[in-house]
Image (tube, rainbow, N blue to C red):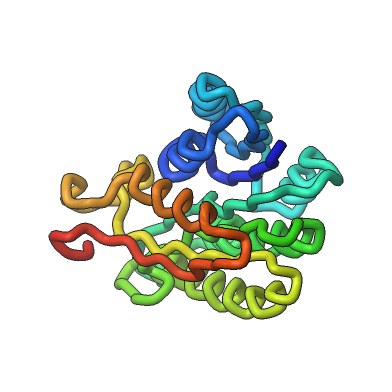
Length: 230
């Protein structure tokens, strides 16, 4: 049975990926902080025959990262999806130390240490998927801490990819444009959500990439709406 670890699976892109990959031969290790929403994801995945486990930890702290690793256990995983993320949108001069620590913790530190822990145990042909953003390549005003964390994760994962080639572990970076998820509920402004791509669109790309033959890797995928990038 394949073991897939997906962070930030309570809703949005993480939930869409979990439901897309749910199958009778898959064990979904689903991380989230919203216990009610995560339970809903698990129930939906169970209907596809997948086995599920709920991992409720705060990835903004090293203790949360360590507790998640301990709960996953020593058995190797076949897929790691680093999806959990925080978006703080405000002028850089207004960002607090707490917002800095939480954003860098979830968006950068947690993915790095999860990769560091799990990658050496992953079998050849397995995959690590990082849900980045077009904000990992293009800077936007008031998105400084978000873009900074995504730029950094792109650099880290691209370098680590080279170290993993000899082990045939694939590193896949996904760069979605604005995606219609709950994250926008906390972002001020009038955003045309009807023009955004959907979480299901991102999940389709992930499934396509990891579904390639073990010796084939799709290293980078950029997703945007045909109407243009928001």
